Amino acid sequence: MTSVLTQSFGYLGAGCLTITLLPQIYLTLKTKEVENLSFVFLCLQELTCILFLIYGILLFEIPLIIANSIVGTQGLFLIFLKKKYEKKELPQII
Image (cartoon, rainbow, N blue to C red; front, side, top):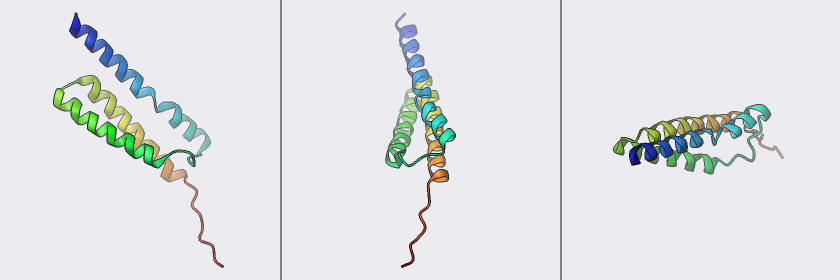
């Protein structure tokens, strides 16, 4: 019973984790606005996903592996969108 309960919470947590960045991805694709999207946050998010992915692999915990693989991919996609939609400022000639 404990194993079923533990796995249930693991998969529920993984499911919730995988949808956390979807609203931001949708908004970014819709508005193409990335000025208020923190690059530092995205990098920290990627580092966290990588560390938890390694942790999940070492423990062979499938929910951690699945969730952090998906969220890591979503984070990389947001970094791509940030770079793609960033407004490039032209150098001023005085």
